[in-house]
Length: 554
Picture (cartoon, one colour):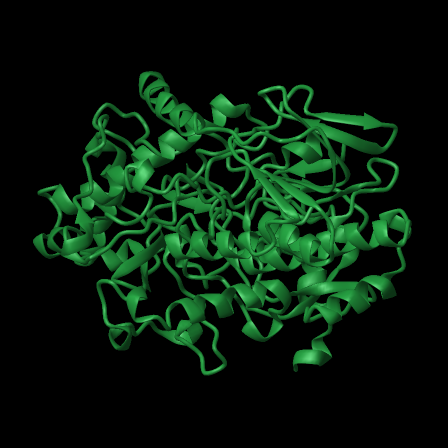
């Protein structure tokens, strides 16, 4: 595995060798770290409020998960989405009104299901990865007089933040460049800026007693019968012929129900594949492909007599015969999530994270290859998988595979207000709302183990019903004594349970807009952000069409 990781690490380092834009020695009103959807929206909001902003992008591509394959938006209740977040989806609709947008498929033939169809109100919730990237670039270019962008600048993980008392004065990247600003936003999925700034945070699951949350801590394998992906079932051995655990099963204790731990929910790739033969490249066989990695899945398929790849993976339709492939299938406990293989990611250095990326890539591409080529599988399943290939017109500089791992959770700030399960389900109204969220608390599995009865089980998954709630301003603000000029709209102040709800990309954009609004208003009013009157923030957000209160939309 080490040799493979080193080979892919070389390829990834090549991605970071793009020309770097020169940045003048100056101070910005707002320094944004992370080219995610939240970071982009924060910059656009700052520019529209007549402030300068720079986005320091660790990679050479913007958009995060939104341009990285997550085209089937987790919107919850669409009525709660407003401001620049809603503007993005309206721009998606406008893009697909062009005849030229439908390169491989007639617009009339695009018929996904549910409320992700083109709406009469001029909103479209689904989109191709390159389209998302193009729209973000368009929004930024419209404000080019106020916004600068630098690529391939990763924060120095040892001395990346320069502070005076509780005030950040600048951030420093691995290349030695320094970016000075009045206010800072950590819009990354990893929260390295936040951590370097000395802000308190948590990694892993809290115990059920920490915030009195019913779903917190270790769940056990059978807590929620609504989630069939927990159990492989009796008769499926977890061992190979030599008596060793099969790959993908962790040889660790499950933990006691209700106890906290350091483990985090699984990552995967939101894979963009296509069935359009004229736009298709065959899925490659990974260099280190080993069918033993999918032996557990084979045993499950055989035991359940499965015939379709839809029984294993969730395939959501995108325009132009493309997909957003996600974990799950029809309740399959083995899918694209690489359970338990990301625990070192949140606190890992760049080499550790890139190795985890590589392992997830090999696992996922190997899974697709297995489904299409393993002769033990039903012929109809193999033929169905072979209809899919990599799209020629996506990720062209990355071998047509997304460079963005779907990072569902890393660090979570311990800030001014810690969002909990109660905030998402019971105490849904807040006196200082900066927007709304509505997706039900949702965690993918945390681990795959052998349970005490000898069965293979997944543990950690839950999905609660959707319910709209107001987001309190304090969830994006550190404690003032720790840092007085930083806002965090992605790795927000939240329990593991509540983060499972608020972690959706449309909401990251909502919080990114709010973060920039607070930073700009603090400068305009010459008032520290922790002392800024909420009414000032509220008025600006309402002016900018953000939806703040439940009564406004229901």
